[in-house]
Length: 231
Image (spheres, rainbow, N blue to C red):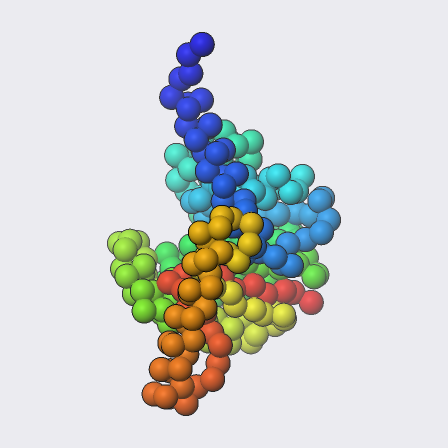
């Protein structure tokens, strides 16, 4: 029995998605809709694994992206992705959603478009709906290296600024999370790394307190997650 390159790519992609599912379960805990029929939208879905993960949990999952290769990969995982620019899609669609995910997208938009993007997301969310964002973290010792790792990266929001903008737009229940090693569900090594990281981040928090007197417990991983809801 032979397997062509497309089948091999699909098999490898599905295997990687299975592995990442354990990480997503931890990182998105208590953020995802309980209703399997919830309307789910993934914007700028460069990482097809998140699409696959969401498609296993929900019946109505769709995405929007400009990268035709990523769209083809998403199709292999059984998820429909529309070929369109995200702001154009949000401006013209009449659909509303219970969850909008935009992982590693905002840093590609620039300052002015970030605000427009968030306003449109708020408009397209159902009451009680949630947005989940992920972006490089300027607070992290390694955040700058992530921001400068791609020529298309324009600007990123610090956790403090992101929280401020979302709250001023009318979002509620805003929360930031780190994307470091998960405590449970991934591997014994990841669990060990989690506890080592907790010690290291305490040292960074202590330095921040000594230098600036700040006590805020903000994310320190090189990228971070932020979630907010619409009333």
